[in-house]
Image 1 (cartoon, one colour):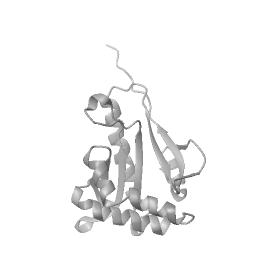
Image 2 (cartoon, helix red, strand yellow; image 1 turned 45 degrees about the vertical axis):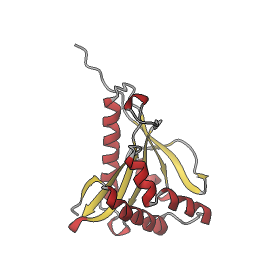
Image 3 (cartoon, one colour; image 1 turned 30 degrees about the horizontal axis):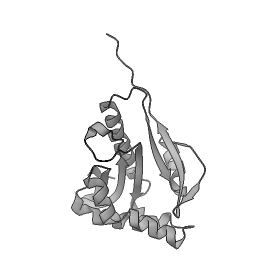
Amino acid sequence: MDFYIRELKHEEFEKASALIWKTFYAFDSAGYTMAGMEKFRDVTSTVSLQINSFDGRMNVYGAFAEEDALIGVCAVRIKTYPEDGKDFVNEKNHLTLLFVDGAYHKNGVGKALAEKAVSDAKKAIAAHGEKDGGAITVNSSDQAVGFYEKLGFVKTGERRVEDGIISTPMRLDLPPRIMRLE
């Protein structure tokens, strides 16, 4: 299957929000309370996506198939530092909002989106000279734990419910940079 990935434009966030909600409702909403579903809807709304990406809090990517049809979404919050000139600091690199339209599951779309987000986080880590390698976290849905484990993530805690949202915390440790001796 042919598809490509690129950063979403702000005018595409409405479609992204709709895809996230449709996929969440079809595959992840079982066991959620109404309050949890409302909280999830709020944090994945068009406005929330726009605000979080506009000020640099996160990069949002889309996977597109034929005729520029949006088939998947993924975002990553990149760790920021006070010297980045931002008025906030993201304390960790965090993968979030990975959703692929059900018609495109098992075609490598989710893996490609996650790899793009991880790659960008690695670049940011390298740009700040973090020699310890760092890590990328994710709060996985019940259905995606095995998917993330195949990508190298490991569970760092038990399944939990926070603000009505169900997730399992996971982490991908990045290898330390090897410093070249001259």
